[in-house]
Length: 266
Ligand code: ATR
Image (cartoon, rainbow, N blue to C red; front, top):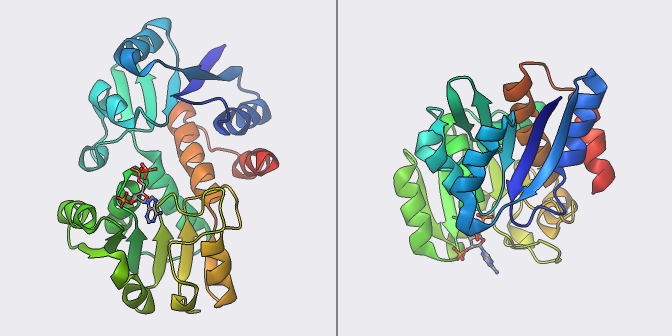
């Protein structure tokens, strides 16, 4: 039997196990997907242990995405992001991927949203924002980063070719001109707040929220009320998993099966 897992702290409420197990079961792959709650002080030992035990692949979640980057041989596109959320243990050693980044791009593709040439605003400057900003840039979008702590927006924008950094006071102006507005802050997580003013939305744009609890965040509801297309946070979660699954197994992931398993938990 193959063994895959998610490593993080905490991981108890992770949605990855039901999503991946459903995919393995559907395809008749003899594999088990488990959770590993690692001690942050012993994370490197944990990665080495996983490799020594012959574990086939890991999803890496908070707070270990940078530690994972240090541990693996990173894929080329991952080098800029400096964070790894997927490890494939191969005969040549552990290879690191960032499917938060590639998966988000697939989520946009799935919704027929063209990012090439689009004006994209990323709100936030933490780990999620990094994955989105680099991903959007790679897909050909013009990226603006807006963050509460403006200096962090400038720091991130300096790393992403062509990107600009802004404070939140400029968000309404940026939104007025945007084709895509993505929330990569924690605002809206288990609350009805939104980082974007309700009256700044317009119908000719796409709103994406990395927050998936709840799925119908105020950010997305306000956008929908203005006539904008919306993509909820479960799509990012789904496609980061789809990309990881395909990397590990070499098989086409059963996307609908994984989506149903995921949404059943939300
Ligand atoms: P993650 O790695 O999940 O992206 P993070 O690194 O803690 O998490 O980043 C959280 C992001 O949400 C940051 O951009 C943070 O803004 P600051 O850099 O100013 O801290 C943003 N954020 C959190 N609470 C916020 C709030 N109440 N209003 C605006 N932005 C907020």
